[in-house]
Length: 116
Length: 109
Image (cartoon, rainbow over all chains, first blue to last red; front, side, top):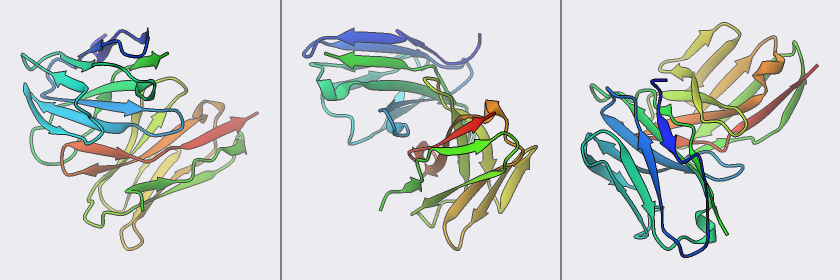
């Protein structure tokens, strides 16, 4: 399977714990995005990388959240001191952007986080 | 006003029916748009891109009305397999997608 993969698919944690999610994009894609989706809502943008550089972060991304893409390939999203409000589906997407026009983003299956 | 607004539905239609969804957007500078489909507990997948006045792909037609700032999606001859949530998407800048809440479609036998 050459699509976007995410690990783990499900994570249950207790409030206050730290969690880390991993995303492996489609190999030739230079851009990687993180979104969060809660029930009944569309995905909300969190952050994106162009190769290894993190170019934009949403206001939704509090200081408890950190994302990295150290070698321009896979990415990790860490949430420290989780809160119940962090419970959501965390979606990763990737795209190849040769120019300026918006292009399709390919989404992974997501990591469903439940904070108890 | 939200950047992208959709009627959440659900729209309940019988097989074979024609159904249309509308989506309004607030940024008049937006040039391109997408419709994504999301099945229950699955990731969103691109259904159609809309770059000019509209686009057609088989039973699906997307139309763009720039003056009124809305995009529509028309599904003809609905199939049971069309049951899903349809997400209207407006790129902000060149790097991120702004999603509507989605419109849920239920096609019944």
